[in-house]
Amino acid sequence: MSIQRQSDEPTDNERSLQQLAWTLQASVEKFKLIWARCNYSALQSRLIKRLGEICQFKIQVLQLKESERTLYTAIREELQNDTQALMIVGWQSLQDLPQMLTSANQVREEFRNHLSLPIVVWISALLCLW
Image (cartoon, rainbow, N blue to C red; front, side, top):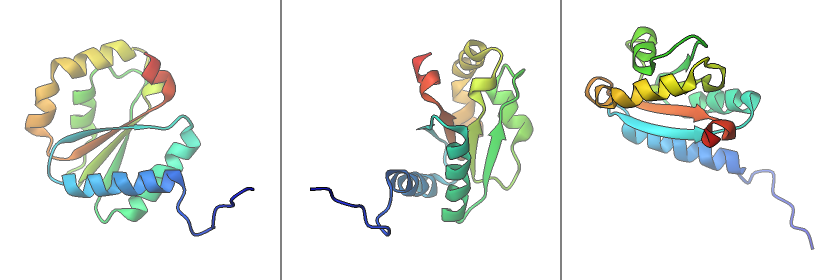
């Protein structure tokens, strides 16, 4: 016997997105680092767009440039004043991912001390293997 999913039943992605939206809402004006994994860039873009529809606050997407070496500097240079949550994408395009991660770790307290918003780091399974 096969059970067919009702069309109004939320998908796994939608349930995960609702949980992420709830976490972001609970973390507005507080630093919180959240990891989100998605292996397909087109799906990732759709999920981020949908998250913007669900949430009632300003979400900014930071696309990392391939030449960037320090995450904290990239965030400080691009962060808009009215941003209430930040999504960071583009890790797979970095020329020097180890340098980026090392520098972020070295200044990790700066994130907590100077960024009072939730940050979602979008990664793929390939980065999880690194």
